[in-house]
Image 1 (tube, rainbow, N blue to C red):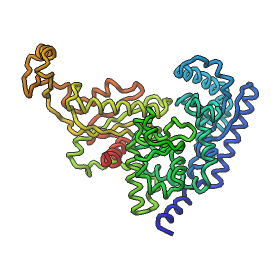
Image 2 (image 1 turned 180 degrees about the horizontal axis):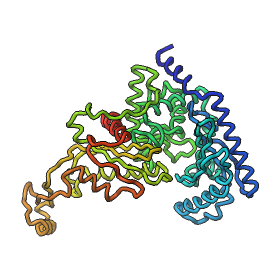
Image 3 (image 1 turned 90 degrees about the horizontal axis):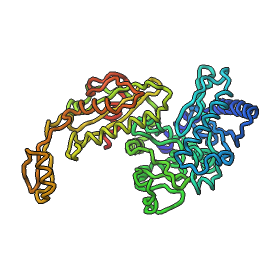
Image 4 (image 1 turned 135 degrees about the vertical axis):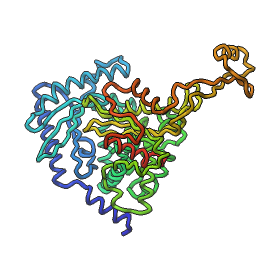
Length: 484
């Protein structure tokens, strides 16, 4: 047995769910199904099926100690579509949210007995769903109860889903029917590797989104086994994975695929790229870790560890001068972390775009990179920035129109009396709005921060306050910047 095989086998023994875990999850699912179906009968609510989905449901690709349960309730679209007839997509989405919200409040939440199911609460992603806690022997098991329209596969393939989660049950069935038990074990291994590398799911510490569970399952489906996947992972960025076996040139014609770094086509929907949200940063870092692992296979590559706190004494002063931190507190815990995350990534990207160039497109602070890290339970969100030139001159020389363009030249001269001529162009020395990146950063945050956040600290890295912010700095300096 090779070192690689031995490592994979040993890791698998430690990450496979126990029989007791599987039984507990099955018991909870059955209790919920019974409760929800009885209440539906009393209230005369019609549904098509209640079924456990996700890795702990019909897929059975979960890791040990993963008790998160996804229970999906199917609704017959035929009973609703008359209400949505003639509506635009955005209005249909709005109306379906109202219907789902009523069912969440009047059926699901009211069904849940506080003796067993604690703190049922509404959360919002694509549409409202219910989260509830099942507590046993001090173990808190989170259950998400999600409504969806139970559509035929042919309908989805022809017209697409009504809501984003309408595909999810078909994803579960595809994995159940197309992966062997050995392949499901391989899924567990690659999931564990992604998690240990801090590049898994929508809480990925590296990049906005890492490799989600379904993408991990499809990688094993396409590559057949984990060893083949590891050996060819570095080719993924150049070789789209398409269930429908289309030529790369044909995939490039699909407009909403064109900006995606990786392409893993959804077997359930040929127009959906499962990898569309997987960040370039996460892929690059995972690729680096895989190459390290192949060169020296060890079990510790699969160990999930807390992200270290940065030791600023180890950082070169010239680099530290270019690193900045924004520390934030979320004031509204009911807002889903993905919404907060997306807003902060949008804000950070705007800071990067506006910070790199003046409005005239002249260089401002030059290259800017960033990373976001949050700890949902504490409500701490952080953005770390690297800025190539955090101190710049008060003015810069801005180029105007060519001297030969008389009309434009005349306007430029009137507007800028201190112009001068050089290389057949007009030029003027222009005052900058900002010459300190920290001042620019402070103003950008002050003017654009979402209302549910409170600023704890904005500073250069050496004045960092919280542990979570120190982890953010570690991620930027060790897991991001070396691979850009």
